Structure formats: C-alpha cells, structure tokens
Picture 1 (tube, one colour):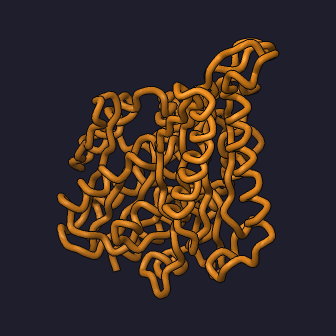
Picture 2: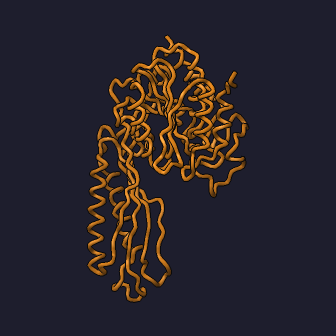
Picture 3: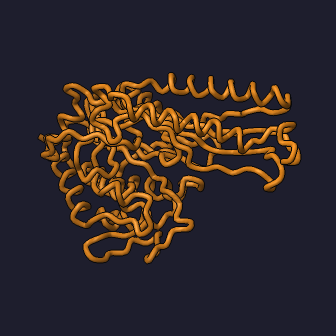
Length: 387
C-alpha cells in the first residue's frame, strides 16, 4: 500500500526542494510525479527548451469536459541577502505559523492541491479535477503558455481555473498585466572633460528613466477608466528596478544596463505602451548616433503577461464564490498566471491561502489557520464534484 501523506507532510517535502527560478525544478517534479504515480495518477511533463526544468499536469476523474484546474507554480524567489531566523528550506512551525521559502507563495497551495488530487482518486467525481504545476512564474509567467497548450491538446477542456496564489482565500477576479525590457545602452568613452565628444550610456539611460517618471506622473493625474478604477494604484505604472554601468567618475560610460517594466491596468493596451517606449528609444538613439555612430540602444523584451479581466457570469468566479463564501470585489496589482489561462479561453480566478504581504520576504510564512482553511476549501470542492 502506498503511503498517503497529509498536505502538511507534502509541504515539508516541497519546501525542502530549493526550486529558485534560476535553478532546475526537476528534483521537485520528480518527487511529485513519483508520488502521484504511487497513487495511480499518471502525470505528463512538458520540458523546458533547455531541458533543465519542466511543467507537470495530471487529471483524476472521468475523461469528460467541464472539470476544474488547480494551478500553481513550483519556483520560488531567492533567499540571497535576506536575514532569515529559520532555515528557509525547512518548514518550521512556530506561533501558529509555518515558516519557509514558498510556504505562502505558493507551495502551500500546491501541497493542498496534490493532497486533493490523491483524495479525489478514490472518489466518484462527476467531472475531472486537473492539476497544473509550472516553472518560471516568478520571472515573468511566460513559460506557462507551453503548459496550457499541452493541456488543451491532451485533456478534456476544463470549465474553470483556480490559480492558488495567496489571497487569504478571497476571490480575486482581476489583476494588472505586465511587460518588461532589459535595456542595454551603448555609449562611447572619452575623458569627462570633453564629454561633448563622447556619449555617456549612463546619462542617456537617465533620459529614458526620466521619460518613465513623466509617464507615471501623467497617469497618476488622469481619471481612471472603469476597469482601472478598482486597482491600487488605478493606473499603469512604469518601474526601473535595477541599473548598472560606467567605469570611473571621469570617463563617459560606455555601457549601462537597466530593466524597465510596465504594470498595465485592464483597459490599457500593453502593446500601445510598448510602442510608445520604443518610439522614445528610437528618438534618444538618434541623438546618440548624431554624436557617435557607434552608439546604440539594444532592447530585449523578456516577458509579456496579459491582465486578468473580471468576467461577467464567469464559471470560475461563480464556483469559487460558492465554495469560499466570499462575495466581495477584489482585484490586485501584481500579476499571475491567471492572465495566461484567461487569454487561452479559460474562465479564471485567483484564490488561495496565505497573505501576499508575506511573499518574497525573509522568514516567509503562512498562518496555520490559513493552511487549514485552504484544505477545507478544497474539501468542499471535492464534495461538490461528487454531488
């Protein structure tokens, strides 16, 4: 007889895998696939192009349309430079909390979903329950598209998706979309006393960053549209998170690298924002080349995440509200894989245990009461699927 682990035991196993996005998640996937197989649940891998990572999906119940997908990501953010008081790769129970990297975001939900799949295997479900585990959510939510396409091609189409990001089990029906660029400014070095003969990559980067500041100010002053009004803030934001460049204080910088990202409210078109940014890049690059033809700006658009739009009469919202008892109106400014599922035609909501305020923090935790509430939520889901 295979050993049936509790959701809490499964969480211990998952957290012990340091599945940071920059590293492989295959040891975690190996364990999940093996555990499901022990309980008679076949799973399918979708390897990454480089072969060092993989998505995983599985199904229990009848092979008919109309089921439900429980979606979670297996990657976590790094712990580098964070001041942890516990071992981030071991679940530590203390003061009503479970500490460890990913306990909140979002291995807590993944553990509950795996436990629910094993429980459902022995039940007479009227519709299938599907599990979707992805990689690289924390670095742009792009890779999940391959997982969704594989599920569409392989499994009967589900009528609803619950993405179990931490929402304290509130039903989130909308979130911002996003896109981001890695920007490489290529200047020309001269002594700073004759800077007019060179091109400073750092100072030209500052022009682009100031353009972003000005757009933020304009957006903040504008009256938000009806879809944007519920968000905090209710406008599209532009952000530069990292920047590096230059050689010395008296040399015009040859190189400058920075990242610029957009969090786009529903109602705004991400492609319109990209076109505006690229037009400004072209204008500044022309000024740089007028001084030194060797100067250039190179762009790498490394992610594009569609927003999650509230659905009128959506099956995912209807089912999740019924199960959770939450009838409030909730949207969030962070992005999730829910936008990608919705873009592929799935009715989608975001709802999971834990508080997003704890995500990515040192001493990340999930309240034990929240973990138990998540288990009760999925118990109600399984009871409904057998009715």
